[in-house]
Image (cartoon, rainbow, N blue to C red; front, side, top):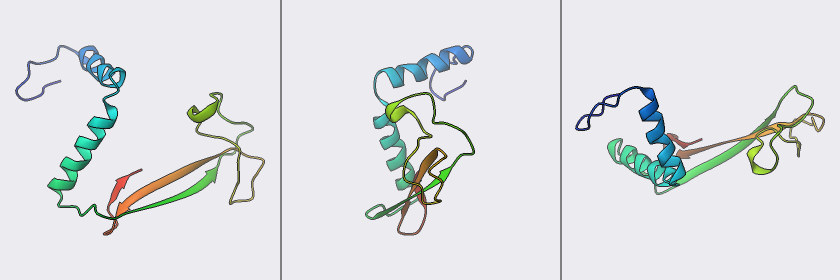
Length: 104
């Protein structure tokens, strides 16, 4: 991996360890925010108003994910498709007033 201005990393393991440090240091929110505002500035996006919409879909599967709590993606719940017998996920998308996606 080569990053201009930084010494070359020797192999993928070093790059992966660097990414682990970001997660362990709870820097992901700050990194996401910095990337978002840099991209918004670069693309001249107006982000004074954001629209957010959600939907759900179901899986042809017998049960929920094994993880409990907030970690499980597929869970039983209210189904707009009238499939209370199947686990589902909720999908969300945020867009600018021009319809450009800014967050999934």
